[in-house]
Amino acid sequence: MVPESDYLGRWWHVLEDGRVQCDLCPRDCRLHEGQRGLCFVRRMEGGQMRLTTYGRSSGFCVDPIEKKPLNQFYPGSSVLSFGTAGCNLACKFCQNWDISKSREMDTLMDAATPEAIAAAAERLGCKSVAFTYNDPVIFAEYAIDTADACHARGIQTVAVTAGYIHAEPRREFFSRIDAANVDLKAFTEDFYHTLTGAHLQPVLDTLEYLVKETSVWTEITTLLIPGKNDSDAEIESECGWILQHLGPDVPLHFSAFHPDWKMTDVPATPPETLARARKRALAAGLHYVYTGNVHDEAGGSTYCPSCGTCVIQRDWYDIRAYQLDAQGACAHCGSRLAGRYAKFDKPFGRRRIPVRLEAPV
Image (cartoon, rainbow, N blue to C red; front, side):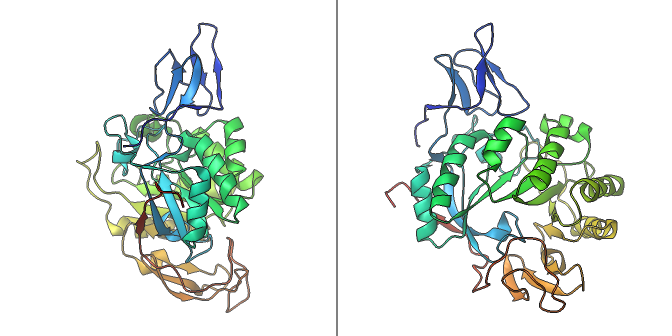
């Protein structure tokens, strides 16, 4: 196990009573000496805010970019993925609980400097590096430094996040990010309050900020949980908000829930629920809607919104056909699809390759 780091955090201030308030996310944790925030990885020590996971990781893997999921950010490319531990949400349905709930189990077994990660991505032929598995918001300092090292080598950066972050650190964090997949957990405040211990509006604010005020390529994922956030009314409300506030070109992924963490009594999401949600989202006017965690070639493929042609045919993470040019223009009608594209070579495929970075790269 890699020992905890003692890195000075960037977003905090001292209160009149001597406590430290963390200013990173809307939880505004106020800590006494030695106390940790809800994320568990930021603590008050010596009157300062310290990040305990800088340079520590739960592991590194080379993945297909579609696994993030990002279907319109250099499709077919590979991404070096890693996370740390902890989370600033308390989702009862967490699908990565062994990593995010690190106070029960510390799984940080690998270590790497930002420069080592960037060098490894370059050596492994990865187009990008993804901050994922747990939420990169809580290790923002480590992610920012790693992103700077990646950009120095021409490597893109990806954040897979719940988007629960304050405005000031949000500007600094996303200024280093090239693409993001934001988990929009549901579209009711009651769901966020009851099942995540957080609030909906800060996430909506992050989405609007990303799409309207940055160049970050943004996709959205909603994990549909039977009986919790999968009603037709809620799906239609979510899609209507996306269309009105973000526009029709932001891809939306509906993903299947499997029983885990503190919701093992809830059944897995039927494939029919995802197909129904996708149909309603397309009918609402969204151009790019996907299904995930199920075998669904139609729901995993990309279609030209102008002529309806399947321009990227996918079977899970395998690309079986690709009909876009280097600028993302449809080979049939010439319309340019939203996203980030390059010359398409041999796709990485559906492999997942674990790597270790402890030794110098």
